[in-house]
Image (cartoon, rainbow, N blue to C red; front, side, top):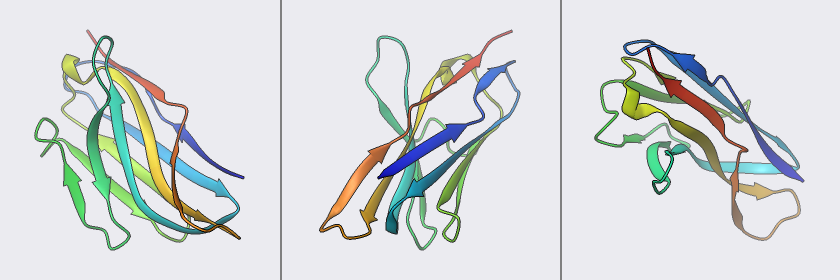
Length: 121
């Protein structure tokens, strides 16, 4: 069984920073792409940032220059550093990873449970 566990959300003032972490655990053979997505109330889930095994990162235009995604291949973790936060960044942030399980036959997308980020004064 594989699971993704997130941590690090919370309440922060505009202009502040947060660090979100996500760890994949369980019967893992390999982890492919990892990423962060977010969903604000009344809106569809959107891609925030993704990163390949080789470290190639892509960002949504709305967060470029403010957010940074990094991963640790050996620890199966991915971190999203959020800075210069704006009220419009308020959302539930979800970790995502494509994982090949031990004894598995295909890559499967897994999601974390989500962590709330609220930007407000």
